Amino acid sequence: MAAFGLLLLFVVATVSALPADPVILKYDENRFGYVRGPDGTPHLVDSWMKVSDLSETARYNPLRQNVYHLFTRENPTVSQPLLIGNVGLIGLTNYDPQRRTIVLLHGWLDTATADFNAVLVPAFLEAEDVNIIVVDWSAGSNTAIYISAIGNTVRSGESVADFINWLNSVTGVTPDRYHIVGLGLGGHQAGIIGRNVDGEIAYITALDPASYGWVLNSNKFKPEDGQYTEVIHTNAGVQGYVGTLGDVDFYPNSGVNMPGCITPACDHARSYFYFAESLVSGGFTGRRCATTTAAMGGGVCLARGNLNLGGIEPKTGSSGIYHLRTNSRPPFSRG
Image 1 (cartoon, rainbow, N blue to C red):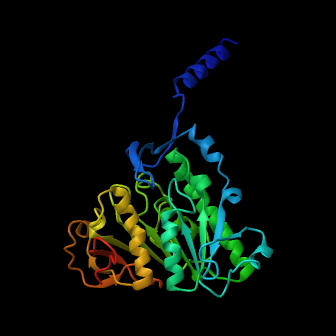
Image 2 (cartoon, helix red, strand yellow):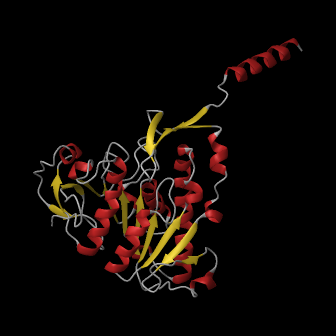
Image 3 (cartoon, rainbow, N blue to C red):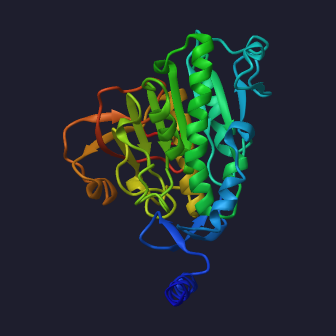
């Protein structure tokens, strides 16, 4: 009995010594930092997940809460809904399995009406007759608890992959007919989708993918997530990821401080403005660099080879780091 009493005292003392809200996962070496929302407002966030954060993440159910909006040239401004499991609904929309399909993923604290989508939907439809599926995962992204938004990025990506697998199974479409594009957290989500789809996605683009909470995160964007993966860095080291993540990484204007911008939010947004222009008019010829340091250090790049940023078609087989310069206003491309 005395031994049991001592054991009980030991257990009570051990539990009492634990933090009230223990850290269970670390996504970054630096715990606290500022991350900007889509309007440029800085938010002080914690990149270490605590037990209390799990309840916020558990509230998000991507299978039930993600919304899939279809846009085509027949309905370029008003979307049509697609619902996983509802085969009959597909036939009531303008979805055409003979077209390529573009999947767009917004970032943190944003929605389907984000500027990112407002710019890219018309650009894709002007460039090519495609199906565009705008994923609204705002139920997972619109949380002030940034660490939960990171976890929700992964959960949403896995759920979007399930949606694509289902759509392909009932339409006969293959992953090599897809182009997935994401911004910020959506950039990493694009890669997560690619690695969870049955088969290889042809083309994945990460636009200024998020940095904070992703440096030590094994779920971050990877070169092998698709047949061709491309990253465009426009706010590197501030809001966007610094290092290389894709088969090809572009650092326009050295990756930060875009001409014509005076805020990090503007720099971040330039990623999708440059990409949209590349869809419609091409241009943006990048010079190959030997290292990220060279690409971000003024663009003195002497490695052989040029490559165009973005565009409709994947540049499968290409690789490397590229620097280019842009104009301060549209047209942004210098050719």
